[in-house]
Length: 218
Image (tube, rainbow, N blue to C red; front, top):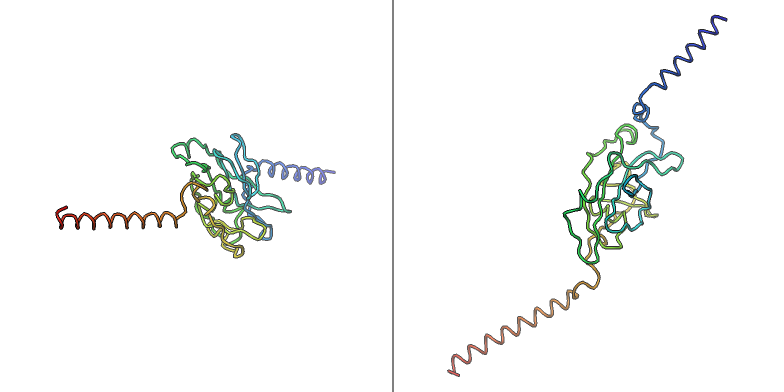
């Protein structure tokens, strides 16, 4: 009876010690190398991160976050850590031209212990950036204007700034749509070049005529 009591007491003490561990100690435990990892997109509503898809087109004034984390059983992964970025603090001094939008883009490379693949070194975290893009630019395209981004055939982001380095697949996503000039905002370059050439010819003709007049005394 006494022995059973001691065993039960030991189990209880062990459970209490486990539960008393800081949550950070449990969360920072190295993840299973075989557990899938993923890049996931998020949008701030001012108080929390809400999940969005890479092809979502956030409106002007949005705050977008990207996070690399473990995603067991096909889960989405974790939202970016730290404080929610303030649009006014990051983009308040920047102006967007007609047909463009301003969006804050924050990138979280995840926890070096809990999220990184074994042997991978997590890149240094960078401050959120203010990105100016076309009105129809997607969350992934806006991200591509801040770093090199590769996506798979389904459009999911597989690497940001070549992280994780173990991910070799995917194709590079161009940021052209995020930095393109607004449609209809100017004349085609061929017309501009033609107009400049015509002006040059007119100017040359005027100079020649002036010289002829000065020679003839007219």
